[in-house]
Image (cartoon, rainbow over all chains, first blue to last red; front, top):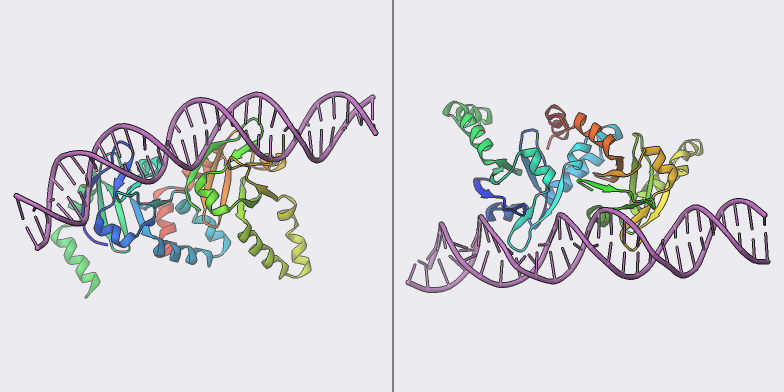
Length: 138
Length: 138
DNA sequence: ATAGATGTGGGGAAGAGTGGGGAGAAATGT
DNA sequence: ACATTTCTCCCCACTCTTCCCCACATCTAT
């Protein structure tokens, strides 16, 4: 999943998913919290793989995974290609109106637009890109 | 099973099961005590799998599993999608009125709302989430 | 310019959560 | 055994949320 798409949440709490992202996420997908102040959306297949991995863990570790599930939502696209984002998730990521939907490889991230711009400016410097490419060694 | 749903037990001791959770638990499911101060609800299929696992154990271990059964209740949804939670179970988890129904992957957990908030604040910190995601390595 | 796809907004029907009345079953006391 | 109380569960009613549908603006590609 690639690209940055600037969309807005309407008065009913609905967020339109960019069609390019929609193609990869599918009709039903999962949105959960991320380690940063944003949300992460995983396709159903991707989510199921995650589940399998967790089921294979010992009980104690499974319990530790709870926040991931507790703060996740199974989202289904409405007929206009939008999802209804639960209030709790919107609050977590500080999403009010303007949202940046960011392709992040395996998942898509939902950022508050201003927060995304701040992150983007910092991490998209020539030096950083150079470092990334070097690390990749491709 | 995902998400947190805040519901309340009415004067008759009935608890409405969130529809998203209902879809996964089915019409009839099992509620038992958990290792924490909360209850855990398993779908019939999930419960049966647990049973199979226990049957395969040596007799002595089976006996150790007794508390799990002794404090379990087979719950059926009424026509409004609610269950009647036995008093003993409510007491165990300290459920009075406000309940948080928490999706925890394989099962759903029933917490006293205040107790859940306390747990949630502690385990949903950036450091903790980062640790979880790292452990998951996804 | 025109057609098709995409993003945004709002009306209205359907569903979900809550509360209460009341019939029937189960437990209790006489 | 009978009457009384308690418990369980069905139905109905109300509110609020969710979701389906239609309309319109914008953009892209032909």
